[in-house]
Image 1 (spheres, rainbow, N blue to C red):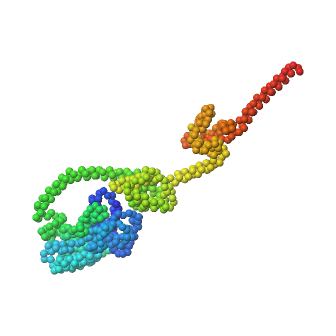
Image 2: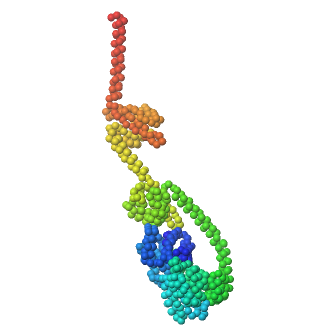
Image 3: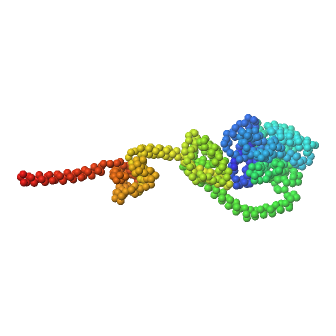
Length: 631
């Protein structure tokens, strides 16, 4: 699950940091089974004035940064971030649920909450702080509400006017605001003394135009006169401030996380039916002491910082609380710690397993690509970078179909949707499949792909191992073309040609061979040559084969083939051994041509020679007798 966190202010700002930490921590605690990735962006509008131009600039930045990246939810804090998102939401992140917190300028209900937009508003407790001011200063005549004059202060000022008129019509008050810290200090110094309630100080500027840190701003204002300073925000609880009824950034972040769990993940009820975060009563003990303020004058649920815990009228509650604490500790030791230890071991094993897995993926020679259930690439190893021409950071988060030729993309999307919509089972799993792929430069090439599944909790990832087989396919195509040329040449030969295995089983015959034996190819293929030979010819053939295996080459022999008219035709056969890889014999090729009169000529020549020799001997014998007789 991917969540974008869009903050109005900077990360060093306590209010923003508290909301961020509480939101992330609550989600990890309440939904540990989910794999959540957080991406934080900061508008930094305490330092940069939020204007339409700045909003357009930041929207363009977000558009480029998250182009093609899938988001499951967006969490925004405070007014400026929500204003930006409402303005550019359809352009940047259409249909993505939005949860917000810390929003006050849009309170109470603009825009209306929907299933895709819900959150927690920041409602300052003006009336509660005025009651505290009256409790710690019974003779209070006038209040000063002090702020930086920014949009948040102006909204709070409208709220102050409404609640003062409603609840404290007889109490005088004054709104004191300025963007410059030192001008604000001068305005406050004119009041000399009194009780101050801070609205917002985050936008105060120093003479050089830089934003003033909150502790420095509070210290400067405290030096302007004799003022009891109360605050309505937890981020202003610093030295010089007594305390007050504060809106807590941490509580805001927690509440927003619960809204996300309820609205998006359907895992938790809402924290507050009205959607407003509760306030807390927090006070600094040293400040109370310096102003001689009694703890009795504070609300009963007050939290005292840097001082003794409140015990007035609460001894029984403290005793019960102590007993509950001890029982919880025992329960923790007995039940929780073993589980935590086991969980820690499991997480450590998972961590090292992940490390080993990613180490192997990065050094393996084959390209490895992983996609999530949205079809987006989440794993892209160096071999894949080399194969496709993309850098890892360039391709992560983008759809896989960008690596496929255009003609295959629609079919890929439909198959992917069917795959993840039900049981993730495919006939491609465990199989080696060849298919075309698309390089970054637009060239197509062929890869051999093998798919497997990786389960992470209730999430499934598909892992593909790929190998470039372009050269292999090219060699195979060339081999097929060569085979076709060879067959075309052999088929047109007038000589009888065949191929046979060492046991004389026929594997190929041409048309001339079929005509020679007056049979079709299917009647000859698979038959053994020696089955048509006499015992004497078979013995000679076996010796012939033995010689070819021992010394591959070409040997010749002659055989007679009976014809239908009681005649035999003589053929001379050329036997060639076809040697395979590593010098092993593989097949034999046999070609033959007819010797129609050769054998007859040899036989006749032999008989004539014998007759001539006999006659010659007779003549020589008669001639010798005549010479010896003197005749």
